[in-house]
Amino acid sequence: MALNRKLTHLLKGRTIQSESGDEGHVAITFDDESTLKLRVAGQATVRVGAKVEAVHEAGEHFQVDLEEGPSVQVQLADPGSSVALRDKSGAVQYLG
Amino acid sequence: MYIRALGLLLFLTRVLLAQEPTPILPDANMTPGDTFDVTAQDICTHGYARKVRDVPAEMKREVYREYGIISHGPGDYEIDHLIPLELGGSNSIKNLWPESHRTSPWNAQVKDRLEDKLHALVCSGQLDLKTAQQAIASNWIEAYKKYVSPNPPIPEPTSRGVPEAADIASQVWVNTRSGKYWKPGSRYYGKTKQGQYMSEEEAIQKGYRPANGTGE
Image 1 (cartoon, each protein chain N blue to C red):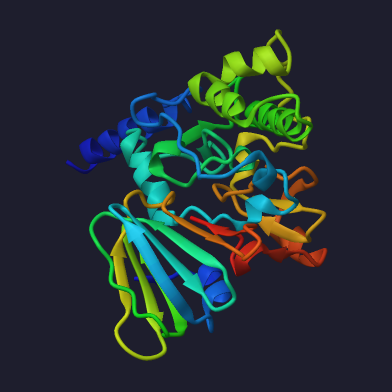
Image 2: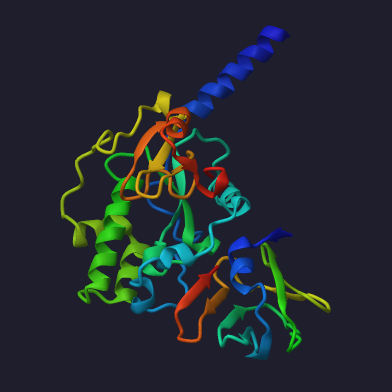
C-alpha cells in the first residue's frame, strides 16, 4: 500500500483524542483539535491515545499506522472523495 | 510470414494513430461529477486546491480504461476533474474523465477558462457554488456559452506556445512562477496560469526543477 505523503506529513505525531461516528462515517479528533472525517464502507476501530506514525492508501484501502499498537484500517466508501482533515478552526488541511 | 506480420503491425499502428482524441464531453453515466463537502469559503481560500491529494497514477489508468482509450500520445489528453478542484470537485472516479487537448474549438484549454470564470463568479458572490458545480457537470460547453461567451472560442493552438504534435513528446510545461516543470500527461501540464513549453533539457538548464521530484 502506497504511503500517502501529504496526509502523513500533516498527521504524523498527532495523538488521537476521541473517535465518533455512525453508519458510514468515522470522525477522529486529534490533540490539536483537528478532525479527520472518513466516509467508510463497514466499520472501523480506533484506539484513543495512540499517536499517528504514517498513512497509507491504495484504492479503497486506507490505513493509519500508529506508533504503538495495530494500525487503523478502513475501507473507504468512495476513494478520492472520502477523506477530509480540518484544523480546529474548520479550515481545510487535506481532502482526498 | 515476416512480411505479413510487419504488414499487420503497420495496419494496427495506423488504426491507433488515426484515433481522434475524443470525447469533448464526458459520459454522464461514467462521469456524473462528484464534490467534496466544502463551502464557497473553503474553495475561495488561497491555496485550497493544493490541499487536495493528487490523483494516483493507477486511478488515471483506470479512467483511460473505463473510456476505452488503449493508446494515446503525449499531450493528447489530461485526466480532468469534470467539476474542477477550484469549485470543490473531488478525486472520485465519478469526477474524472480523459479530456482532449487536441479537439477544436472545445478542448481542455477552453474548459480551463470556464473553470477560472466560474471560480471568480463564486468567490465574488455573484454565483452560488452549487449552481456553478451543476452547470459545469451537466454540460461544460453550454456552461461556457452561458458564463464566458455565447460564441465558440476561436481556436488558438499556439496562444500559449503549444508545440506542434510532433514536438510535444519532448516538451515539458514550466510553471514559471513556481519554478517547477510538469511532463505531458501530468496534472498541471499546460494548466498553470503562468508558464511555457520547452524541452526538458532547456528547463533544467534554466534552473527549473521537476515538480514532485519527477515532473509527473
